[in-house]
Image (tube, rainbow, N blue to C red; front, side):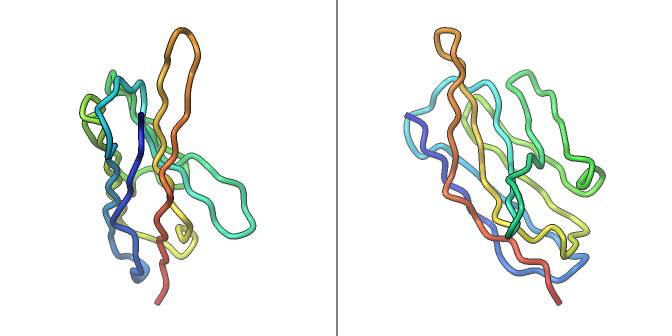
Length: 119
């Protein structure tokens, strides 16, 4: 099965950078897309960035130009390079993967990694 493990969160000052990593810790599976979501206190979980097996990338408007998603979907790994971080980027960041099996989509989530942007 798919078990996503994230790393790289932490405390950073405004304007700083962090890189989040995510990998499937179990057997490699055919995955259609991977990405990052985040959830701030009192807010709904939102999509930050995702990448498909075909290489297409999409970003939330709030992070365009500052965050870059990369990875090797075939190896079930994805990264999020976050630059010019702002206090409003503070949230728990979750790795996400989506698989299509027999016409049905299945979603997988990591346990989350905390990012705090504060001086």
